[in-house]
Length: 554
RNA sequence: GGCCCAUUAGUGGAACUGGUUAACACGUCUCCCUCUCAAGGAGAAGAAUAGGAGUUCGAGCCUCCUAUGGGUCACCA
Image (tube, rainbow, N blue to C red; front, side, top):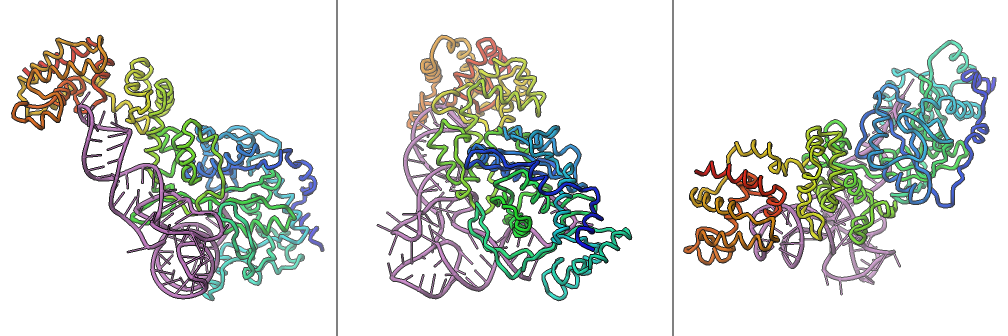
């Protein structure tokens, strides 16, 4: 009996060899320095903020080195798989312009190193497992869940490191004859890797983010082939990243502790391991405690949440860049006209500690960004948002694009533009009063005129204002001068200072007068610059609204 | 619990291979400007770099201990 007999018994139909696979997946023809990176999600749900972060980094690294960024679907956990989530993941990535050069696209695959869906790669994994079996580096394990639980319990009781390794690895000790007999008898089994490592021994590893690290060798005989015929993550990582020729594996830091497993796997196969970058996990403050962004508890964990809220995708990416590289913000303020595509990312400038998700920062970035959009761009982007998330908004936008653009263009497209909006969803609510029907609704709720002033005075001022409308003919300065003289005529000071100095002469100041007009036109005490509000509304509408207000004041 | 990683103001974080008053940005507060708001301008507060010890002429940076936080110990990824 030889290991070959065992291997043939387990995989009678596998005739291909590792060498055949090497030929099928030859080295990539890429310039020196080009990195091959990947994003390899599991189809278990929505796109997590942390996953977007990881994939952004992988994408960026590949792009800036003229390399290849590809995607791979890690669907070996059939139990946790969520129908359709693979496609959703890729679609959301595409929203951020993170589009793979090859790999899994959600509903199709493209590239010479496929298949890019792990469940379709079962025969590839089997070739490598058979090879390990023949080399005696893997063996079948017949332990049941109960056996393993019992093992763990005694290990815990005896205070030894729990796990399946060395003398605790019962099935590792089985003879070939015993293994073959059990398999022939139909006893269910998995295949384990035969580790040669010692936990007491340290290995030096290099992580792109963390630098030199000393980790214990792996000594666990980990499962590489599950009873359902699919590999575990560790093994799939070995095979896929080898044959797809990944040069940098960037993944969440939760993988750091299994790095020794991966390294042992690579060295057993005599394959060159990729470079690794273990990225910090994005955290959140919860009752004073830092913790990982949780899919269940935190809205911010799902990138879809931000999209739905109306944060522009650019802002989200930019925010992620600020936590990815500490020098990003500085670079950005020095190069205000460049986009983050021009930024060069470096692993060494990445923080090693999990950043807290900082909503205020995101809001600030978003606000700055939206303020710099031209009216055309803001309209287009808002429309895109509305088409997916807000039908009512969409109607409003499509019904009168010009009007909407006029509204949002108030004090935009200049050196210091207004910064009113942090997300698309805020635009309409902040400008409702411009729309006739909405104005009517708001009007019904009453006009909040300052009760310190006599209704009669307000009436007279508004009336006179309405009868002398000139905003169409004059510039802002002149118009405002007229408002001042109107104020003055009614014993309101021309500015706050003179009012404060002469409270006995004046009943108020021009600001109070402006407020009257503002309330009549917008039903609110706050609005953008009045002059422009008048312009956007137009003479007829202004007259109509003031007339309505006058009715109330009678 | 074992092992691994981390720890600089509320947040993100800078500080070259140890070298004087610990950047900057967001946030907070104050004042100015302004017809309100959003901005803009000026300024302020806020950290003896988790605590302790050691090495050194000198430590945020090196070493050790402690504390705290995070990760990981599956036929999940």
